[in-house]
Image (cartoon, rainbow over all chains, first blue to last red; front, side):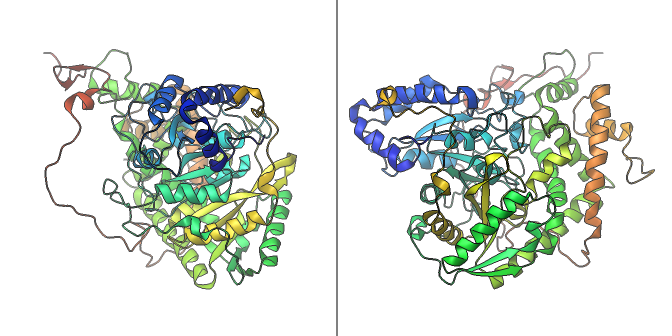
Length: 493
Length: 105
């Protein structure tokens, strides 16, 4: 339901009106989140004392203004100094980082109130938020359904009206897929645009941090704040960051939009297809030049992703040995036993599955057949995109083949779950930026996401096109009914 | 070395071998489930073989314009020993403490 916490602007207004009473207002906001989140469980946990302490330090401090007093949710795989950063895994259930992630520093510099603890699939391995060690998050549009994943908590918290914006991470669709399924806006920046310093790594050549927001202008603002070079991430790109908010309110006459036929076949549901086709007509009506294009290697993206991703994950998760940080098994034995038992007891099923898969594809005799082959196919997928961007400024597709599925519906069949990433993983493999925004509802009256993809570092094009669509449609004004309205006396001031 | 009787069959021994490499102990039931899943997933990803990758350079960095990043080797402050040990499951005298590595004779 719409409330004063729905957008960054209304939240800033709320904080400014509170003035010196800001800490008390934050206390009441925390009560609102507790009520709203009872059914949704977007937060794996909230350390209310810590948030209140930060709120009291935020009063009158000489910091930036662009997010002054605005609560921003943080997915639980992004390090917040001294706060539980668990990746929603038993392995890290007591882990408290000794430093802040780069993006957290950037948000705090702008006066944001950091609220960590958003639920996620364990180590971001999943498309439904069901592999979290804290239990699953529910979709605010229908609590019998999943919110998408892995940043399911980050999307559900925004959709339910708890918080105006959050940061997630996207390795194969983990920002865009839950944003689509929860009817909000999710943006995956170009690989290297945002520093990954302080993001607990899943697949280092694919991971990017990005915002989930209620609307496109908030997305542009968040991206503007978190983007930019950081020497602590060697893959961070030293390139001038444009003012993304200046791409709002532009018209899209003559913008060349490509529609790749491969994204409208296979498992796509009739409702999703109709909504996206309608959206393309809207774009055309706004003056965009729509052309058909082909990305012939799209059908190999899931295979490629599920070789490259787990291979890198198995390497990144090798650090969890029970010795330096994280869970250690209490079983007796020598150091080797400690490794085996800690990893057996600390990792959940999906983490084990990916580590085993990745280890297999990197093992002697199989490296060439799987990993190297996948990296070559990845080059082909990237070439498809670069060829398409010779002919068009951006691509328009569905974000997901279906609307949100039921809780438990796909947990028994890992491969079927992996297929949820079919339209989102190509952008990660190619490193290009992509955004998902609401374009109506389809099957079971659940939200549909429209995905736009652009050439590397052309987030400006994404924002221009997405904002043009948003301002000429009403889809973003539809809110889920669950979540209580805090507009009354409960949260005044 | 993994046995290669058939490319499409994953045996329980293969799963045990991979789990050993990954330092994860698996129960019998888990071994069976993961065997089935690995076989199913690997069978699916074998479609990659359809793609002609003759003379294709494998992706090593997604944005090929990027070069190696070097910095000057200048000492700078890092985290303190106390901070480094703050998440240790066990520690003693400023060190990480682990079970005995060398067997008693």
